[in-house]
Length: 387
Image 1: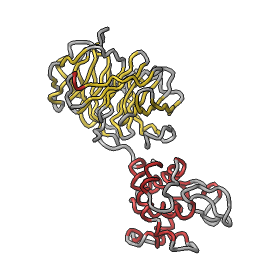
Image 2: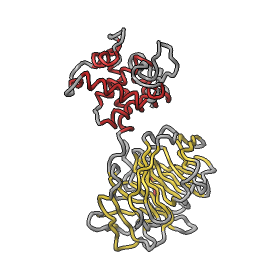
Image 3: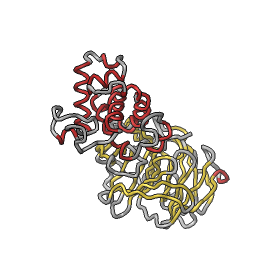
Image 4: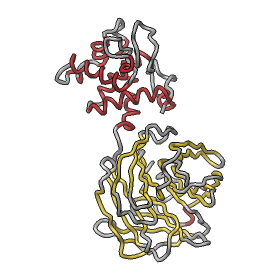
């Protein structure tokens, strides 16, 4: 995110944004969002911290007794309060709302509002940064406003029947399903990946690694699918995941391979590549969180994220050291939303406000979808479509 901002900002912060500065800005923007105020309030706050501290939480009193992102003096609050980005932002917003009652801050010039709150000796500096503040807020806002959309989840029951469930990402409530098919696959599946709303790939649990495409006709009031279409053999993967753009990932005996899929309903000729990314991928579960990003757990309970660049080129991030060992399926529809299926048939939900930062500090538990009833032997979520 810092790299993206450094190429799009126009003024003081161009080329100077870092992961740390992004995290500081995110704290401020999150406080605005949690307060129920709109993006303009966040732009006002961010323009202020650009001018005051270049988006840094300064803990040394270099300007009289000023501290923190907003350089608030001792009259604002205690040292610990002013160094707490959330508290400091709310203190700033409190004064803004007092000075501009009845939402008048929404129409006043941004630089004027900043100055009215800060009472700076240099009042003209704030408005200049309004444009960059807007860019920063527009970039970070989607990551603080919580999970969105509907997750479409397909599953396979132990008897081979398919299931479909829709889950509201924000509330965690099921909005549709579970709808269960009457027909069965006709074989025991080993791994599955959802390509789109009505196309699933499954492998057969045998030594030949037979790959099938399942075309879903309807999943509304009933779940009806065409007889599985045999595509080919050699797909001996224990785990499969599709990233929503063009890449299918599979793990077999610890080796991660990447395939390219070129159409919505592929034949064998439309699944190319089979590139070996690397070995040592001893994962218990696997899902994709976005284009060329995968997520998985280990039997020891680690939660791991990987950015895949190509053959022999990938980067590993450890989001959690333990506690994820009880999940036997992991699925993600994208957007930082993760679901973990507990071996006792409950489904738990999580939200990662930035799924591509390689850090677990912004990953939070969001409760359970259901405490029981998820008896599927395989689960897979439709990934977000990326063009």
